[in-house]
Image 1 (cartoon, helix red, strand yellow):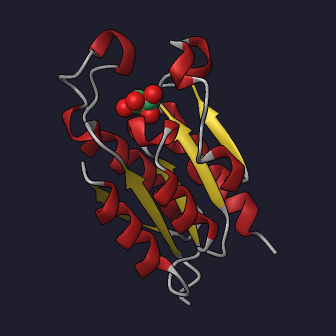
Image 2 (cartoon, rainbow, N blue to C red):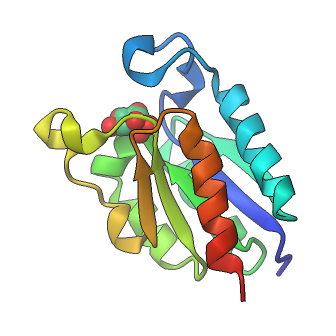
Amino acid sequence: MTPGIVLLLSGPNLNLLGERQPEIYGTATLDDHVATAATEAELHGLVVEHVQSNHEGVLVEAVHGARGRVAAVVVNAGALTHYGWSLHDALAAFGGPIVELHLSNPGGREPWRHTSVIAPVAAGTIAGFGGDGYRLALDAVARLLRP
Ligand code: DQA
């Protein structure tokens, strides 16, 4: 296990950030958010490894590859948050701290967004703070990893 690696997982459609519904998700791109996470991680002596996919299986395999190698996971699963049970199961088998992250506040949106299948396997959720959430999530992870 390399204690310093944090796997940042980005689910479907997050590759379109910056163009996709900017009134909800803002104008920053996914690269901008990854850079924010990496900068915060560095302050805590951590390194971010980022995987974005529009396919649930790719995210599942990224979690498998993180087992025993990566210290923690930060996951914005996009819409998979609400029904991605295979991602839930992969995360349940991860074995380290997990932080759930959203740009928007799904709890204040359509009813189908109110359920998260990620929440039961996460230490906590950061939602509704836009791009600041990436900084907050890495800070939360650093605190969870502190002995
Ligand atoms: C999201 C919220 C989800 O409901 C949505 O499907 C997304 C983005 C967020 O970051 O606010 O794709 O995870």
